[in-house]
Length: 209
Image (cartoon, rainbow, N blue to C red; front, side, top):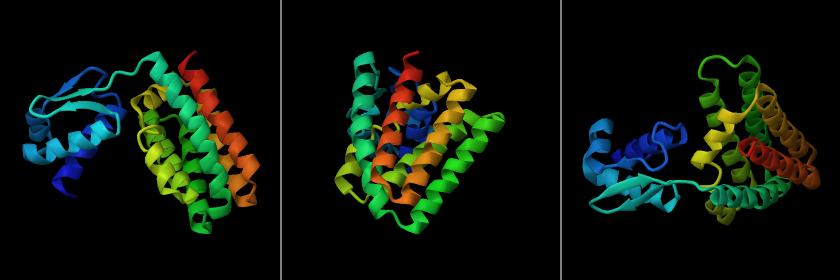
């Protein structure tokens, strides 16, 4: 893995997992030391994270983890509801058998994690959830949609959502994913879009509870 990719993944995963909290300052030298790379790839990684809305980056000063307001949160969920339901609809007519099989594997793994709830399950569920939504958008075969959703589906507030989920919420979320897979298998665009819409609204309800 290239140095810039290592720096990018280290900071991005730290933000999503909550190791770097909103408002925390990230200096190029601290990240370079922690990751074991020079400052140049760190600078490029921070620029990428800035473009995705995860940090506010100023050259030579470092970056600050983006702070999410209630208004930001509402807007993210509104955008996700519109865009991801559209993506689910597109995927029903474009997903390959291999893509559908991979989505089923991810959804079933997420359901197992939500039922067993072993140590570290929230982090694993967050990762499986991100993979599911990314793979679904890949199946939608729209580069414009993928770019629009890149920062939305892995925003730090998504991890906070899982931290507020009850065991029932976790299982419901995984069941939504499985139902979306069934809609893809049935090639039913209205079914897929409606379940995705319910899925996003349920996540918003959990965060605002």
